[in-house]
Length: 474
Image (cartoon, rainbow, N blue to C red; front, side, top):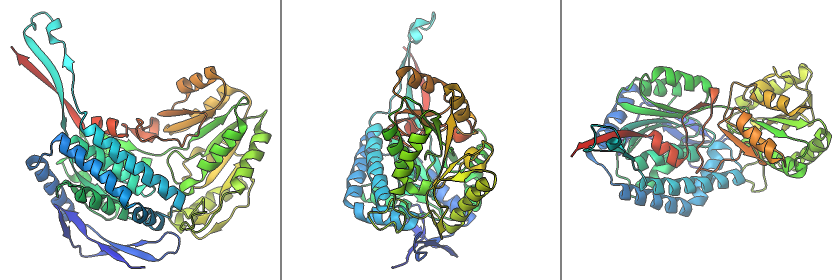
């Protein structure tokens, strides 16, 4: 396989660095690319070029719409190339890569539409005595340079969720992709510029987050930061950003409740399918399943039957359901957490098995709330099944978490469904489907340590624009 080299991309030009970082095929371990290791002056140059572009070359809303819509068409035409790249650099299965492409294309289309809808509102100033001759309204204006730091697990989709709304809103960007999965961002850049995006709107700097991320935070010319990743890093970004706004999409240990009146076959099928996609490396992947004690035996049998049908192995095989984790180190960490839980009294309903970066689905019972596999974000193909007797207790256990991104509940009772929507302390509550459900048009974001702000093109555009009040004295 040919090893491609990616330089830094600053001001529409490729800039070489003194050293380069290898990017590996996550299943074979083969080196598939080299990416430049940025230095601080590169980051400063990228911000300077982004700021200059923002001030000098404003695209009209209709131009932004056409570019983003064209990009969606070009990405569809390059589907096979994009999917294969995700399979190799992330370790995604063919099925997961197809899903990410579908959603990326849709996000580009949604962002294109939002470029045409940016508007303010009329303010009834004349309703106040003494302001009868004043006309008031708001407009929304772009913030400026957006600093975007993207994660490894959905490198194409989540880069698009930051870049496309920023472009739709009229901003420019400096993007720092995940070091282990940077290729997707470069491919997205190619598509957008082929679609007509002028050079300078997107600048890409690569390297370790501990260095490049810190240099980005040092840059006062960045108007806003948008980040997807760990809670620890998100908290640090918020502390360092000062008065500048941030959008943070952080972690979760998603609870899913299966009540005694649920459609158990549906619940088992949905939770099994979405517990282990992307090797469990999704912020809203099913992690904790709370099942009413009256149906836990039947549900568990159905669930395990579904999980046993999943094929683990080579992600390029179109029949594979679970591919490798992002690294052998992460798979080893997952194995340690599972074995630790077993040593503390938990039981595994399936053999605990790891082959390099491949970690086979693990389903644990008899767990305790303080075990890492329950109270922390495992971010791996590991699920716990926990019984409950009283629904309020299930809600309390689900809420007993530092996180609050999304939760799911299966029930046929509308009153219970609506109570769950009110009581569960999560940014999203999904009824009769799993916590993993995300439609890219949704306002997506969490509470507590799961972050700040919302993603989804309409909501991201709001985050990435300022509302400005205009008063005219007639």
